[in-house]
Length: 141
Image (cartoon, rainbow, N blue to C red; front, side, top):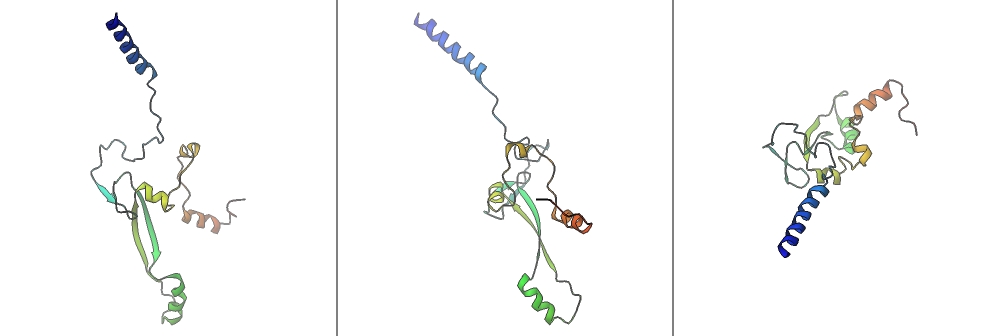
């Protein structure tokens, strides 16, 4: 009698697990990666924020263009320069972050569940400048 009760309870437990095992919720369609059928990426990036190693497809990559000279010193250099139309060189750097540092430094932002489903890329600053030059007034408040 005891063995049959134990067997029944064990079967109920197994059946209960199979019937009640929901699929785990998925937060992102791509699971936070962008490899799409390429297997596992062997290459790693070094995060510019914290120095941790993150896989190449999971890291956040941004191309930063900055002036070599600070904005406060540009006017002084132009005044002292012999050339009138001299263009100061720029510094081009590819920044690579882990997702934690990218959120902390506001390179990317956390989006709501509905906004995560929106797959249209954000408008680039260059495109905004061209839009304003064409005569559009920009976004209305």
